[in-house]
Length: 439
Image 1: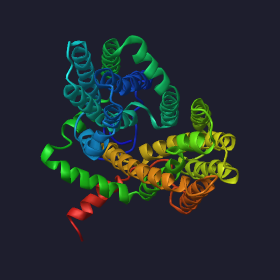
Image 2: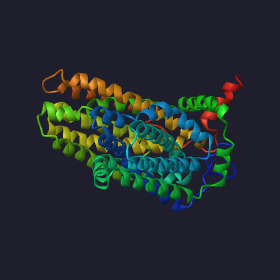
Image 3: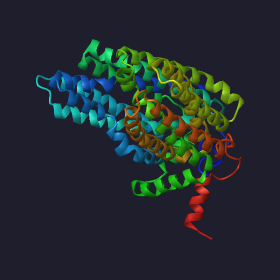
Image 4: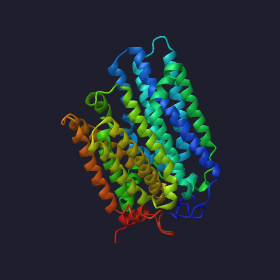
């Protein structure tokens, strides 16, 4: 879209120049390696803090540190991704992460490591990653032609699902087996390899020029406001952003309380949680594998609409009979539906949003999606203990998701085009012009 057109790279045209096919492979490889590095560093700091202090409270704080930067920098990261060369941002993120991971290894090797320094390094390392994702989305749009984006989105969703399922086990086992110091060194190596693969991408020169001239720091607020205007000026993107956040509210009512339900309500051993999560992960992988075939036949807006309905069907199962078995079945369906939602939503958003603003739109969407997670978790926690069988929790989540499903069906998403009209100006740019020069 737009910036890959060498003749219209700065004018908002939608004609694409076919990028080299190897770029998609390099981008996916970098994403995989960098994601593995993310899972390793998620356990390095908590393990090291446990070694140094033995404090459960400090270990929990080390885990929570990872989420703080997404709240602090999430929206800013999108503006940065749209102002500068996105490939360079990804490379810098990986290299800075490698340096910080190495620093953690050096600190851990000392005779008397400073707990405060470990927390500081972990916080800075976690602060680098929010800048990576919006830049990655922009590079994906440039490096992968529209016809193949659904497949790359499905692949990244499969990686996310697989790592979410295996990451806690493999990451913890990896750190436990190698030790914090060696695991940190390996972690640094993964980030360096990812940076090298990104460096090998052959993105069109026009895109890099646009990034270099896209704005200055003093224009960040103006660029961010323009991103908001663009988001609300494209009805399908605006509705999708809000409905994804609402779907997260419903999903995390249950998701955040699975541990309590399985152990406290159903009185199952702790290992049963792994079975439930594993079954959900299997459903997510199946949904990710199926999504490219479905998106080859149907527009992403229609797929997203149906996927929201499938999600409601998954939530119906434990609402009918609250038990670990029914929850496992329902959450397998929910996992598949989530992958269909994510892949179709990413594909639709990449196709409709002007490339020069994709970072901001992605960051705003992520911030809204994340904001409903703690709310859903709190509501679910309050509901789960108010009914002997926890049926009220599952019924409430189902009702919210049914509302999301109905709203999706009535929204512009169901009839959203697969791409913008040819030879038209991106909505955000037209709206921005009219705002600056009202009639």
